[in-house]
Image (cartoon, rainbow, N blue to C red):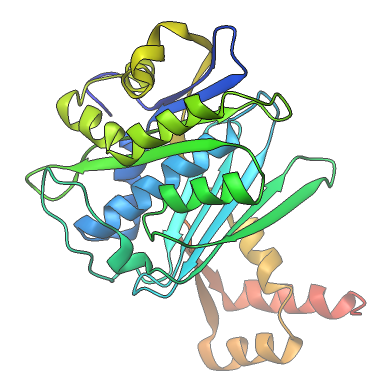
Length: 306
């Protein structure tokens, strides 16, 4: 947790302006992600920025929404995958969690050496009722938050300024994590200059500097610090807790195994006498016995296969 504040996110508007602001404190989320994936300091910051960005996108509106972000770069991390929803739940993983990213306590970590400068940002939005939207943009900076901001501005065509960051403590673990997203309201038009000013402040490390100077700040204080002279116009509409959460289960593991070819299941039964399945997102391990595999194989064989 963060100085007793606890992980949370707020949705806001600027008074009399078509500008929305979402801000979050995600220290507990970042620490839990790092713990589950057993990553080193620099990779912890990558997970922190990515999980914060996912939560900011998933809670932009009051609608129930699920957002999946894939940052697939040419750096040693291999890729960063995030899954978040409007209920304030998020999970994430690195394709290569053993990758080393230079990091020093109390300094902003530059992630480009881990993410890379070439690749793509894929964003998939599930709005429910089988309504899904997918977009893509190139990776430009390798810093995660700036790359997702570029996606929002170019692919979704919404003027945006996003800053997500984490501060490392002397022990190399996350001291505090959080982020802010400022956007024009779609189809409202105008106020590009204000968003550009927020963009300038974010790129000058306003989020990092605020988190470092005030590690006990809540999301509203973080948002006001980034907004600067516009802070007095901030109106908070909603606040909710956020958490690292993975919905994997033994039932879902069985469903995944049932999708394998029958000869693959036969080999697992004959050679391994069972199976161990590890969830990419949370690293939870599921042991599946030989008897369970036989039952899964029997049920799979009975279903028509197209």
